[in-house]
Image (cartoon, rainbow, N blue to C red):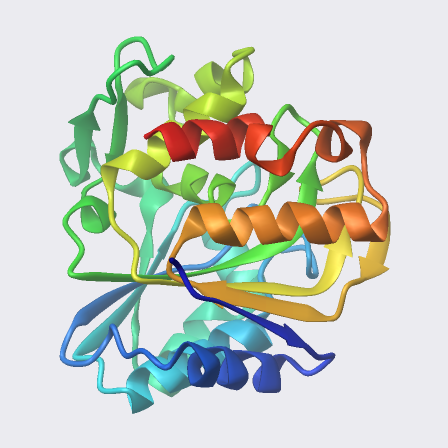
Length: 265
Protein backbone atom coordinates (compact mmCIF):
# COMPACT_ATOMS: atom_id res chain seq x y z
CA UNK A 1 0.00 0.00 0.00
CA UNK A 2 1.34 3.42 -0.95
CA UNK A 3 1.85 6.19 1.59
CA UNK A 4 0.51 9.70 0.95
CA UNK A 5 1.16 12.75 3.11
CA UNK A 6 -1.59 15.39 3.26
CA UNK A 7 -0.77 18.62 5.07
CA UNK A 8 -3.22 21.40 5.84
CA UNK A 9 -1.27 24.66 5.66
CA UNK A 10 -1.07 28.13 4.15
CA UNK A 11 2.73 28.11 4.52
CA UNK A 12 4.66 26.67 1.58
CA UNK A 13 7.92 26.24 3.47
CA UNK A 14 6.12 24.34 6.21
CA UNK A 15 4.26 22.31 3.58
CA UNK A 16 7.48 21.21 1.90
CA UNK A 17 9.28 20.41 5.15
CA UNK A 18 6.33 18.50 6.59
CA UNK A 19 5.96 16.52 3.35
CA UNK A 20 9.50 15.18 3.67
CA UNK A 21 9.06 14.58 7.41
CA UNK A 22 5.82 12.61 7.09
CA UNK A 23 7.01 10.47 4.18
CA UNK A 24 10.18 9.62 6.08
CA UNK A 25 12.15 8.66 2.98
CA UNK A 26 15.38 9.82 1.38
CA UNK A 27 15.45 8.86 -2.30
CA UNK A 28 18.00 11.55 -3.22
CA UNK A 29 21.08 10.72 -1.11
CA UNK A 30 24.21 10.44 -3.28
CA UNK A 31 22.05 10.67 -6.42
CA UNK A 32 22.06 12.94 -9.46
CA UNK A 33 18.58 14.41 -9.10
CA UNK A 34 16.49 15.69 -12.01
CA UNK A 35 13.88 18.18 -10.78
CA UNK A 36 10.60 18.77 -12.65
CA UNK A 37 8.52 21.88 -11.88
CA UNK A 38 5.23 22.89 -13.52
CA UNK A 39 6.09 25.80 -15.81
CA UNK A 40 3.52 25.94 -18.62
CA UNK A 41 3.78 29.71 -18.29
CA UNK A 42 5.29 32.24 -15.89
CA UNK A 43 1.91 33.09 -14.38
CA UNK A 44 1.42 33.06 -10.62
CA UNK A 45 0.39 29.85 -8.81
CA UNK A 46 -1.53 27.70 -9.46
CA UNK A 47 -0.91 28.46 -13.15
CA UNK A 48 2.72 27.56 -12.53
CA UNK A 49 4.82 26.31 -9.64
CA UNK A 50 5.57 28.63 -6.75
CA UNK A 51 9.24 29.60 -6.62
CA UNK A 52 8.99 29.48 -2.82
CA UNK A 53 7.99 25.82 -3.04
CA UNK A 54 10.73 25.06 -5.56
CA UNK A 55 13.38 26.82 -3.49
CA UNK A 56 12.48 24.96 -0.30
CA UNK A 57 12.33 21.61 -2.10
CA UNK A 58 15.80 22.15 -3.55
CA UNK A 59 17.14 23.25 -0.16
CA UNK A 60 15.78 20.03 1.37
CA UNK A 61 17.14 17.88 -1.47
CA UNK A 62 20.59 19.38 -0.94
CA UNK A 63 20.35 18.90 2.83
CA UNK A 64 19.45 15.24 2.24
CA UNK A 65 22.70 14.65 0.40
CA UNK A 66 21.94 14.82 -3.33
CA UNK A 67 25.08 14.59 -5.45
CA UNK A 68 23.74 17.11 -7.97
CA UNK A 69 20.45 18.77 -8.96
CA UNK A 70 19.28 19.66 -12.47
CA UNK A 71 16.02 21.51 -13.08
CA UNK A 72 14.80 20.54 -16.55
CA UNK A 73 11.56 21.71 -18.14
CA UNK A 74 9.75 22.65 -21.34
CA UNK A 75 7.09 25.33 -21.14
CA UNK A 76 4.18 25.79 -23.49
CA UNK A 77 2.56 27.78 -24.94
CA UNK A 78 4.98 30.26 -23.37
CA UNK A 79 8.65 30.34 -24.41
CA UNK A 80 10.66 28.33 -21.88
CA UNK A 81 13.63 30.71 -21.73
CA UNK A 82 11.30 33.63 -21.02
CA UNK A 83 9.48 31.64 -18.34
CA UNK A 84 12.78 30.80 -16.64
CA UNK A 85 13.75 34.48 -16.71
CA UNK A 86 10.41 35.75 -15.40
CA UNK A 87 10.20 33.14 -12.65
CA UNK A 88 13.73 33.85 -11.43
CA UNK A 89 15.01 30.33 -12.12
CA UNK A 90 18.51 31.39 -13.13
CA UNK A 91 18.97 33.57 -10.05
CA UNK A 92 17.84 30.72 -7.82
CA UNK A 93 20.16 28.30 -9.63
CA UNK A 94 23.08 30.61 -8.94
CA UNK A 95 22.07 30.99 -5.29
CA UNK A 96 21.58 27.26 -4.62
CA UNK A 97 24.09 25.87 -7.14
CA UNK A 98 22.00 23.70 -9.42
CA UNK A 99 21.87 23.27 -13.20
CA UNK A 100 19.07 24.43 -15.50
CA UNK A 101 18.13 22.69 -18.77
CA UNK A 102 15.71 24.15 -21.32
CA UNK A 103 14.13 21.08 -22.91
CA UNK A 104 12.37 23.17 -25.56
CA UNK A 105 15.64 23.68 -27.44
CA UNK A 106 17.06 20.20 -26.85
CA UNK A 107 18.19 18.50 -30.09
CA UNK A 108 16.53 15.31 -31.30
CA UNK A 109 19.39 13.21 -29.96
CA UNK A 110 18.44 14.35 -26.44
CA UNK A 111 15.13 12.51 -26.84
CA UNK A 112 14.41 8.80 -27.03
CA UNK A 113 11.68 7.26 -29.20
CA UNK A 114 9.34 5.21 -27.02
CA UNK A 115 6.26 3.06 -27.52
CA UNK A 116 3.65 1.95 -25.02
CA UNK A 117 1.62 -1.19 -25.68
CA UNK A 118 -1.99 -0.42 -26.54
CA UNK A 119 -1.30 3.32 -26.70
CA UNK A 120 -3.19 5.85 -28.80
CA UNK A 121 0.18 7.40 -29.62
CA UNK A 122 0.04 5.58 -32.96
CA UNK A 123 3.72 5.97 -33.82
CA UNK A 124 4.99 6.23 -30.25
CA UNK A 125 6.49 9.51 -29.06
CA UNK A 126 9.76 11.22 -28.27
CA UNK A 127 10.59 11.51 -24.57
CA UNK A 128 13.34 13.44 -22.77
CA UNK A 129 16.40 11.22 -22.47
CA UNK A 130 17.43 13.14 -19.36
CA UNK A 131 14.33 11.92 -17.53
CA UNK A 132 14.19 8.53 -19.24
CA UNK A 133 17.67 7.68 -17.97
CA UNK A 134 17.54 9.64 -14.70
CA UNK A 135 18.98 8.16 -11.52
CA UNK A 136 16.45 10.06 -9.41
CA UNK A 137 13.45 12.26 -10.32
CA UNK A 138 11.71 14.69 -7.97
CA UNK A 139 8.66 16.63 -9.16
CA UNK A 140 6.35 19.36 -7.96
CA UNK A 141 2.94 19.95 -9.49
CA UNK A 142 -0.11 22.15 -8.98
CA UNK A 143 -3.75 21.45 -8.17
CA UNK A 144 -6.02 22.60 -11.00
CA UNK A 145 -8.42 21.74 -13.76
CA UNK A 146 -7.54 21.60 -17.46
CA UNK A 147 -9.79 23.34 -19.97
CA UNK A 148 -8.27 21.79 -23.10
CA UNK A 149 -9.28 18.17 -22.79
CA UNK A 150 -7.23 16.88 -19.87
CA UNK A 151 -10.03 17.67 -17.36
CA UNK A 152 -7.45 18.03 -14.59
CA UNK A 153 -3.73 18.73 -14.55
CA UNK A 154 -1.98 17.25 -11.54
CA UNK A 155 1.08 14.99 -11.37
CA UNK A 156 0.33 12.77 -14.38
CA UNK A 157 -0.30 15.74 -16.68
CA UNK A 158 2.91 17.40 -15.45
CA UNK A 159 4.83 14.88 -17.57
CA UNK A 160 3.68 16.66 -20.74
CA UNK A 161 6.71 18.95 -20.53
CA UNK A 162 8.99 15.97 -21.14
CA UNK A 163 7.63 15.47 -24.66
CA UNK A 164 8.65 17.97 -27.39
CA UNK A 165 6.23 20.36 -29.07
CA UNK A 166 8.47 21.52 -31.94
CA UNK A 167 7.15 20.91 -35.46
CA UNK A 168 10.36 19.26 -36.66
CA UNK A 169 10.18 16.77 -33.78
CA UNK A 170 6.63 15.70 -34.55
CA UNK A 171 4.49 18.42 -32.94
CA UNK A 172 3.49 16.05 -30.18
CA UNK A 173 1.31 18.62 -28.39
CA UNK A 174 -0.86 19.07 -31.47
CA UNK A 175 -1.23 15.30 -31.66
CA UNK A 176 -2.03 15.05 -27.94
CA UNK A 177 -4.49 17.91 -27.60
CA UNK A 178 -6.20 17.04 -30.88
CA UNK A 179 -7.00 13.50 -29.82
CA UNK A 180 -10.21 12.28 -28.20
CA UNK A 181 -7.93 9.90 -26.30
CA UNK A 182 -5.85 12.73 -24.77
CA UNK A 183 -6.41 11.64 -21.18
CA UNK A 184 -5.27 8.09 -21.86
CA UNK A 185 -2.26 9.42 -23.79
CA UNK A 186 -1.29 11.51 -20.75
CA UNK A 187 -1.13 8.33 -18.69
CA UNK A 188 0.93 6.63 -21.42
CA UNK A 189 3.64 9.29 -21.11
CA UNK A 190 4.10 8.31 -17.48
CA UNK A 191 4.76 4.66 -18.33
CA UNK A 192 8.20 5.31 -19.82
CA UNK A 193 10.13 6.70 -16.83
CA UNK A 194 10.47 6.40 -13.07
CA UNK A 195 9.96 9.11 -10.47
CA UNK A 196 10.96 9.00 -6.81
CA UNK A 197 9.03 11.79 -5.10
CA UNK A 198 6.18 14.16 -5.98
CA UNK A 199 4.99 17.13 -3.94
CA UNK A 200 1.74 18.84 -4.96
CA UNK A 201 1.39 22.48 -3.91
CA UNK A 202 -2.35 22.93 -3.47
CA UNK A 203 -2.41 26.13 -1.45
CA UNK A 204 -4.14 27.79 -4.41
CA UNK A 205 -6.17 25.95 -7.03
CA UNK A 206 -8.21 26.50 -10.17
CA UNK A 207 -11.53 24.67 -9.82
CA UNK A 208 -12.45 25.40 -13.43
CA UNK A 209 -10.63 26.68 -16.50
CA UNK A 210 -6.91 26.06 -16.32
CA UNK A 211 -4.11 25.55 -16.83
CA UNK A 212 -3.22 29.28 -16.80
CA UNK A 213 -6.55 30.96 -15.94
CA UNK A 214 -9.55 29.87 -13.93
CA UNK A 215 -11.70 30.33 -10.85
CA UNK A 216 -9.27 30.63 -7.96
CA UNK A 217 -9.91 28.99 -4.60
CA UNK A 218 -7.76 28.39 -1.55
CA UNK A 219 -7.33 24.70 -0.81
CA UNK A 220 -4.44 25.30 1.61
CA UNK A 221 -3.04 21.81 1.27
CA UNK A 222 0.13 19.96 0.30
CA UNK A 223 -0.01 16.39 -0.97
CA UNK A 224 3.15 14.29 -1.24
CA UNK A 225 4.13 10.74 -2.07
CA UNK A 226 5.84 8.40 -4.48
CA UNK A 227 2.77 7.21 -6.40
CA UNK A 228 1.33 9.55 -9.04
CA UNK A 229 -1.92 7.62 -9.29
CA UNK A 230 -2.57 8.02 -5.57
CA UNK A 231 -1.60 11.70 -5.62
CA UNK A 232 -3.91 12.43 -8.55
CA UNK A 233 -6.75 10.50 -6.91
CA UNK A 234 -6.37 12.69 -3.83
CA UNK A 235 -6.15 15.76 -6.06
CA UNK A 236 -9.40 14.93 -7.84
CA UNK A 237 -11.09 14.35 -4.47
CA UNK A 238 -9.90 17.77 -3.29
CA UNK A 239 -11.21 19.47 -6.43
CA UNK A 240 -14.58 17.80 -5.85
CA UNK A 241 -14.68 19.00 -2.25
CA UNK A 242 -14.01 22.56 -3.44
CA UNK A 243 -16.68 22.37 -6.16
CA UNK A 244 -15.36 21.80 -9.67
CA UNK A 245 -16.34 21.00 -13.26
CA UNK A 246 -18.79 18.34 -14.37
CA UNK A 247 -15.98 16.41 -16.08
CA UNK A 248 -13.98 16.16 -12.87
CA UNK A 249 -17.04 15.55 -10.69
CA UNK A 250 -18.68 12.72 -12.60
CA UNK A 251 -18.09 8.97 -12.19
CA UNK A 252 -15.82 7.27 -9.61
CA UNK A 253 -12.35 8.80 -9.27
CA UNK A 254 -10.62 5.66 -10.51
CA UNK A 255 -12.81 5.69 -13.63
CA UNK A 256 -11.39 9.08 -14.65
CA UNK A 257 -9.52 8.28 -17.86
CA UNK A 258 -6.09 9.60 -16.83
CA UNK A 259 -6.19 7.58 -13.63
CA UNK A 260 -7.88 4.49 -15.10
CA UNK A 261 -5.32 4.19 -17.90
CA UNK A 262 -2.44 4.76 -15.46
CA UNK A 263 -3.77 1.93 -13.27
CA UNK A 264 -4.06 -0.30 -16.34
CA UNK A 265 -0.42 0.35 -17.21
